[in-house]
Length: 98
Image 1 (cartoon, rainbow, N blue to C red):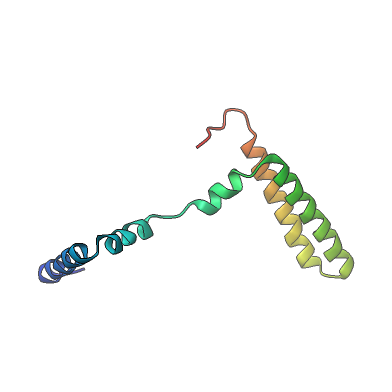
Image 2 (cartoon, one colour):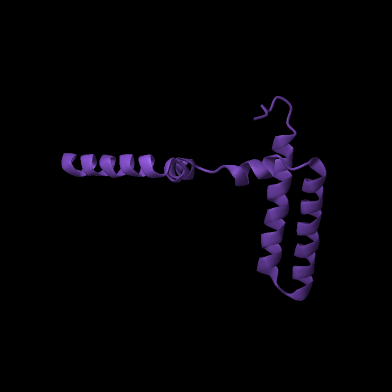
């Protein structure tokens, strides 16, 4: 927690930065906003991309099982399940689009 004196000093420094370079100061405001790009990216994939991702995960899981890496095969199986669940939820009727 900052004291009143420290808070005033910080506000003065912020004012000076804003007067000298407003774009630099505004860049910090956009950096503070949380990013939801990765989540939105998964939900906005076209339907065929889900099918390809599921197919690749199953094929790679099968290859890992044949090569003797069962834990990696389980990982790929989990990815296939994840993509299928996301695809199902995305295509549910009544789901509100963002």
